[in-house]
Amino acid sequence: MRTRTPAIRARAAEVLDRLPQDADWVQDFCMPYTVHVIADLLGVPDTDHDTITRWDTLLTSLATGAELTAETVTAYLDFTQEFTEYFRDRAAHLADHPDGSLLSHLIQEGDNLTDHERIQFLLILFPAGSTTTVILLTHIAMRLAAQPDVIAELRADPAARPDFIEECLVERSPSANVFRTTTRDVVLQNTPIPAGAHLLLLVAAANQDIPDRSAHLAFGHGVHRCLGAQLARTEARAALDELLARYGHIALRADPSSLPVRPHLLIPAYERLPIRLERPS
Ligand code: HEM
Image (cartoon, rainbow, N blue to C red):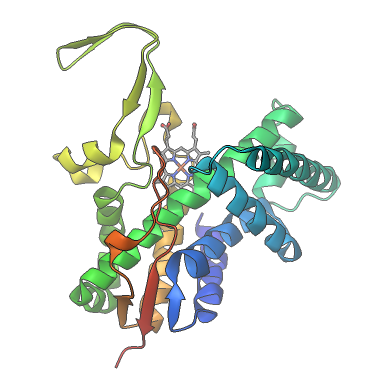
């Protein structure tokens, strides 16, 4: 990940430099930034980033509460066909011209995966990696807007930034809940749960009660623990560093309670966050 950090930082800087003073933090910063990072990770050329952004927006809206209508189902089917053809072509190209990207590694080393499994993995990677990181970055901006003295502290003390990011992950865990199915009978806190039970685990709520906050569950736990945890932390740190290097004050231009949140059980996300960015005085 360390080798990718300068490229991630450059993406954060590039997107921040395009922001107007009055911006929509979610739409104008978090979404393009996280899409660029995943596209770069996969080795998608810059000329195709607009296509990736269009797919990510569609996938995010479908994965996070769009109504199921004939149009949305058709849009999804068209999208999966386009997505599959695009990545099949890229895979065919990378098989002869490896470039060190994640996709290239998947082709060179993931030979126990079928084509279908590779595409399914990529289809998971986009919503798993972008919406969650967007939620974290949104909460970071909300915290900085709510507590202007924190901006001053973090500007003065870069060493405090990783803990601030962890606090944000605990305060509003992006992956709020996860599903599980029990593989055997189990007794949890004196409650018997039979094999085959479908459970909704309230990760965000559990994180509020956890005695040792450094052991938080925001990236899950066990064999399915988040594969992108290190990437997400690197993205958050790069965005925070670049933001603090440019701005000394962030103000919300709307009452957070009036802002639309996608009503998704697993990853509820603000759709917009209107902010005003001010240079340090
Ligand atoms: C703040 C950002 C992120 C958070 C809070 C987060 C959270 C999580 C959580 C809680 C899980 C476990 C889900 C479960 O147990 O059912 C998970 C799995 C996963 N995450 Fe993340 N994630 C983030 C960013 C990313 C990024 C940037 C990527 C990659 C680009 C990524 C890729 C994945 C993948 C592939 C899995 C599935 C792992 C498996 O099933 O073995 N995530 N994530």
